[in-house]
Length: 171
Image 1 (tube, rainbow, N blue to C red):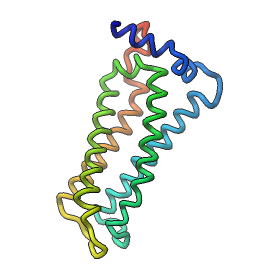
Image 2: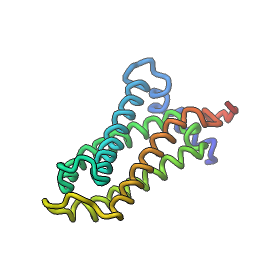
Image 3: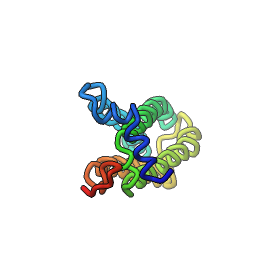
């Protein structure tokens, strides 16, 4: 199967067609709304963690940032599921756009960075720790940059595509 056949397979599939063409509010409008909520949860909780590491909200103990992880996970999985549904609706639009790959790369880097922050900063902090090393602040800065880049590149997907569907008609 060639690439065009691959795109057609998903575009003409039942799920992709339903997400893209259904007049139901449960289709595209709800899925895109859930994607935005998930993005807010995962990027927002990471930002809260990063700003605490930078020194904001000093009365919040560093070790308690681990309590944000379930919210981050929920937001991530909400975005993963809604993102796959959106991809099935417009596979050509996404998979022929370099900005889509930038977004995925930034998400991957942000996830690795979050694991490093948890392992080397949060889980090693004690009740008495109120400040973080320069290394921790660098990781927090990278986290903010990656999540912000992922959000912005995700938003740009609506404007930077060349092909909307497998007809490969330039838009």
